[in-house]
Length: 106
Image (cartoon, rainbow, N blue to C red):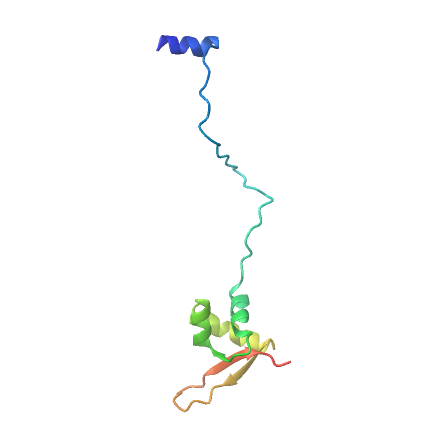
């Protein structure tokens, strides 16, 4: 132990070479890094409903993996804003009216 202390104190100690590249970590992060854009649920629902194919809320839920209540609320708001079309499905098996959505006809 004493020869090691003497080497450290009097400068004869040489640290070993590193075995490979070192990993540098930054506490504050890289400010130039591109952060992923976070899409809102409304944008996700709009992208799913903005197709030429008619879709029900259940089909949009299966496609987007959002909650049914969330999809129902956003499709209603998008329809009221005039961004998508809404129609009633004419199926006699439906007890309640089932709305279907698609993109606006231009």
